Length: 258
Image 1: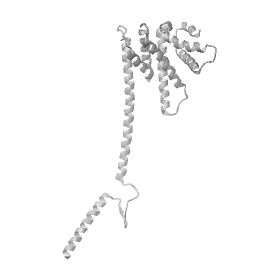
Image 2: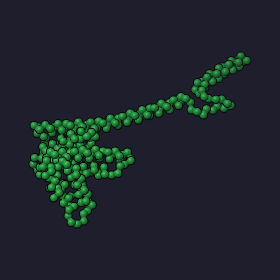
Image 3: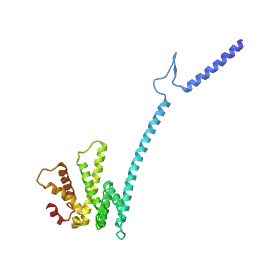
């Protein structure tokens, strides 16, 4: 019996020793002072895991930012390629243009409005004016030319209104104003090239352009009270005239003043 009791105590001691070793491995910062308690600071392995998570999160944010930047550059590159391809088709003067030129107009207009590099905008503007010149002889109703001319004026006026607003401190509004300044610059190039391309015949060959400029001013010259819309239209017309004044044939200045 004594031998059995001694053996039992011995095995208990062994198990206790093993448990103590396991406890030491699992919780090296555990202190036994009548009861068990953790030290106030977090174990080093947990701190290491937290640091790894922070580094992974920072890396993830950098990757997402890079993907976003590459996505924007991809869109810009696509706009440039489409615009240059459309310009090459238009420059091939020996080849007839397709009957439907909407895709060419869209590609060039997008490039004029959004290309952030000034030389690219100038290139697209020249191609756009050449396209207008090549299709102006088509029989009426020349919907493509009419729509192209109207959109040039409409987008120029809309962009100028945005740039006229006070500088915004909020990032999204600041980006909108930056895009509007780029668009205003490109559309100014487009209208100026249009005037240079058609020279003194621009109002004769593009009657819609003369209509867009003259009607608001004629309305404003009437005796009587003007509505807000009529005043705004007259201001917009003056904006377009000031944009093209240096590119417009000198012989047409008197026509506008009259």
